[in-house]
Amino acid sequence: MQKKSKKLNIGEGKISGALSIFFSLISLGAVACFLFPEYLTTQDFRINYPLEVFRWLVFACLVFSFVFALLSFLLSKSIKMASLGMFISALAILLGGAGIEIKEFEQSLFSISLDWMLLEILVFSIVFIPIELFLPKRPEQTKFHPEWKTDLVYLFKAQLLIQYTAVAVKQPAELFFSGIGTEALQNSISSLPFMLQLFLAMFVADLFQYWIHRLFHGNSFLWRFHSIHHSIKYVDWISGSRLHLVDIFITRSISYIPLYILGFATDVFYVYVVFVSVQAVMAHANTSISFGFLKYCLVTPQYHHWHHSKDSKTHNKNFAIHFPFIDKLFGTYYLPNHEWPHEMGLINESFPSGYFRQQIYPFTHDPKSAQPNNPSTR
Ligand SMILES: [Zn+2]
Ligand SMILES: [Zn+2]
Image 1 (cartoon, protein in one colour):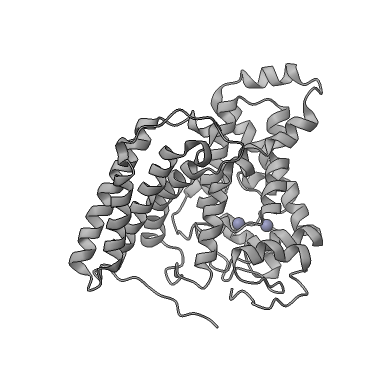
Image 2 (tube, rainbow, N blue to C red):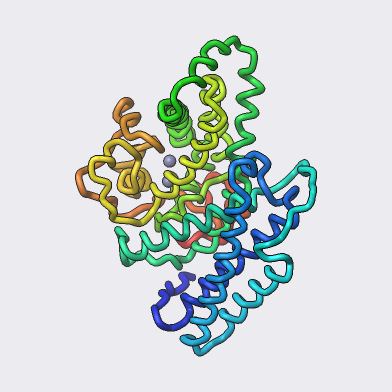
């Protein structure tokens, strides 16, 4: 049954209550990273961010959590949310707070990227929530559509597993393409200026991504997995993470092959990984921000929203994730002046609701012909 969409109103104390809980959870998560770095942090990224900045962020989040809890106490008739925010923050402080020291540790074999997830969620929320709130393309589109909780799980999972879906996937490329005699080429590329390397990395990765993306659309078995991404009806910065793990692994592995073969510098690779996340989130955002001339140079929301269009006349367009000119090159470019798609989502395919069911479903069913027991309400 379709659940009723909810809207949060300013002045009821619910927004401040939710913000208090949000900041308290970030603080608690960050303290947990300090307590168990071997299991909860990303080895490859740890060296790239200054610890002191992380500490200040914990402190700021704790302060914000208490301020918003206080505001919620004053505005709301219910003290539930504010109390929960305060309780979680107090727990974070009891466990060590911003001043917590890190013990000596050895990296465990398996770990998740909670540090990366917290930073990304914090930065993305601060940037994209106000953008979608104050400059929306579709103001009527609610955040609390029937699948928003599932999309949150996708968002958290995508960030938590970043070292497996973005960093470690270059290992297949290393395995197959090491020792093929490209050292001279690699040396000349890694000595190019940083920005030029970054542009080249984006270009070749997007070129490979383009063709694997087209294959995911053209091959009926691969489409089972990729159609999950196209099942998004309310495209926004959160829902853009709705991707099947098979889709992520294959697409990322293929995109990183050229980055490895061509030997881009390590810092270029990491900046590229960050850039991919930011542009992917931006491309899905529900925002009317005009990018001016830039919209012809870089993939923007209007451009990528057309890729999600429900109208079959505009299917199979705009496969690129960085540069629209790649679609131009291969005849799949579509960007009508100021028009946006009216509706997004799928026509014939259906999926069950919930993250785990959606991950298993394409292995056993063709979403095109099957009718799931618990159909998604998109
Ligand atoms: Zn697609
Ligand atoms: Zn998309």
